[in-house]
Length: 97
Image (tube, rainbow, N blue to C red; front, top):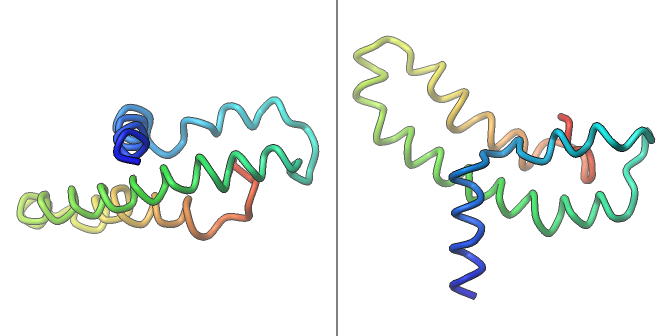
């Protein structure tokens, strides 16, 4: 179990949340297939959750600097709101949200 979590963290660090968006270009159907839904539920969503937690942590660390720089809203949107929206607010199987 520990190796799986480390694997997800490494993928999240090096890839971000949009690494599978490019794979969705090869699918031309409007409705996602069962395979796309399974990949989304068992691979993309867990990575999105990890990225959301990590982004929130990075936002908290960068908060003093972004506050002084006057771009707190931009930093929040990129590090917290973006991953949360990608993970929890898009339909299952649709990777190009």
